[in-house]
Length: 287
Ligand code: NDP
Image (cartoon, rainbow, N blue to C red):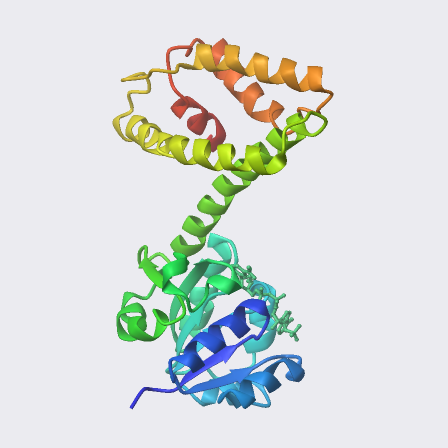
């Protein structure tokens, strides 16, 4: 007998999660603030609870996937969580996750936080590579890993309940930088004869080739030696960046996405660290 599971929140992500569990014949109770969103799932075999309290009472394992941390509080503040295992897949900051863990424990629940590294179409398709970072109660993770692995891969990153959000946001922040770079690249060719689709395949190939740079940066940060094995040093990169900025100007493209990073590199160079890679910038930002 598969133990019952409760899912709170049937937005785009919650609905995808629900469908993946239903497809795996997971007994499921769902609740959503706007009841209409639960109707199609009822037809697919989910039990629909009229209130969040009723939904929570139906299972020992309660998965939450709401808009933000505030909506989790609004939904669960008056609800009895005694003896429940709460798995919160709502995106939030590390601090929100840590506070939410304490809040859950004060209510007699065990708490596991999650950060979803997938978009809804990737849920329920293991081959898509989507997964969820988990952190917090290792016991909850261990007891429910099989169930949690149904919609997406699972990666447990530690007992600190803030770590799932920390890893989630670190990856999304890096992705944001990549999106900024890609946006700028398309702007450079916008008024030229280059076909965007052709540039796209070159970009994907080049960014994939460069992604391994993260390992070199990590090595410097771990050893504390920021110059070891550097083949493209800061002095060279700053020089190269002036070409990027002059090209943007020549193409009539705003350099607003590139300038902040360039400025940071110039400050480190001015401090006499031209022989380093980029590790020194990490310290400047984290100060
Ligand atoms: P949606 O906007 O599609 O759905 C939001 C859900 O939150 C709905 O169920 C909504 O209920 C509910 N909600 C909002 N405010 C409240 C409230 N005050 N009280 C109760 N319920 C509330 O978002 P998603 O489903 O896409 O996202 C859910 C979570 O998953 C978010 O934290 C998001 O960051 C995360 N996520 C989403 C991804 C995506 O690509 N979609 C990717 C990775 C993570 P109602 O129907 O009544 O409005």
